Image (cartoon, rainbow, N blue to C red; front, side, top):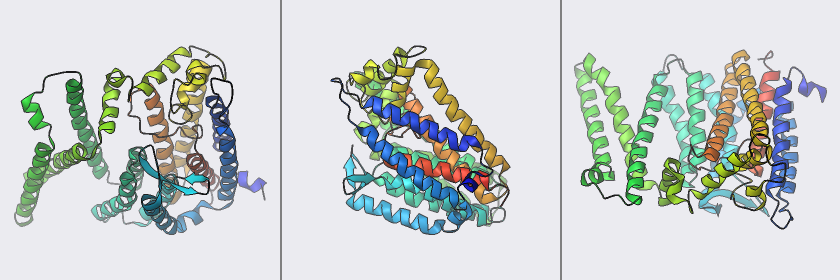
Length: 438
């Protein structure tokens, strides 16, 4: 029975998560070393969570993933309920109400919800009329995304929200033959990011002592952005009304652009109103960490120092000065890769990156070889989840992405994230082993 779990399974799907998790436990131990030589002993908790995750993963490998997809609507509802409970009764940690306390332990429902969302969305797209009713399917898909997304944004947890959006984009791109809506979303996202960066640059200019520019104060304000979006939406509505009675080719060609630009300005106006000062500072320090070298930029500066000081072969395991002397905050979670670079150097960190790269390659190969649509979509969602965490976390340590608190898969300290990653890895292994069954 136990041997059957590993039947037709690629070794990489089992070994790489185990190797990365082991490396994670070692470096959680390393980051727990205090200047006086004592240890925080957080690695013991990580070891316990690894054991729990391993047991759950074995159970998931024993259950055909198709059964998980079949009951995914119940899992999705359970996940939504947990997110609502978290908002009402959750513990606030570092300004985010993302945790539910159970005894002396805590779980982060948004981590579990990622897997529930992937399974349920795969089920929906597999059964939806993606060829006949493209617009309707896309709108329903947005509805499935928006409910958990809003509940996570309310916490607020911007990093996890980004993961959900990327999962959505990957799965819709694979699951729907008409990809024009995804292209529209990507353009909206790119234009919104550009507008926010422009605002960020202007704020950076003012914070550095620059004189206010009256025209920029007007153009880069909430009122102006909202007015632009409202005007474009009204124009789009009027042209759609005209086109309904008198179909015109030029209107159909222009309409997507007015809606895209209007939506981008709307999201930008909302960001101007909603984003808190510390979140704007994260954008500013991404432009230049020296802007707030003792505040929001401190972590990035210390991270790059740790990475650069590692050299080719590193300072040696448990010997990193940025680590043991406590210069780098969040060193066991957000910036654990910086400590790996400091202690193992370019050589050791490259091995970590190659392990991730080989794991992603195997998932991509599984997506291409999986015969059933459900398995293909679930694997796509899992790849999107892993890759987003990997890309944002590594970028965070280098200062090229905002500090959003996304952990490095299998390696960063954290029970909820480690268990969810191990569950995702088990489901991925399950899909590959059953590729000839469905």
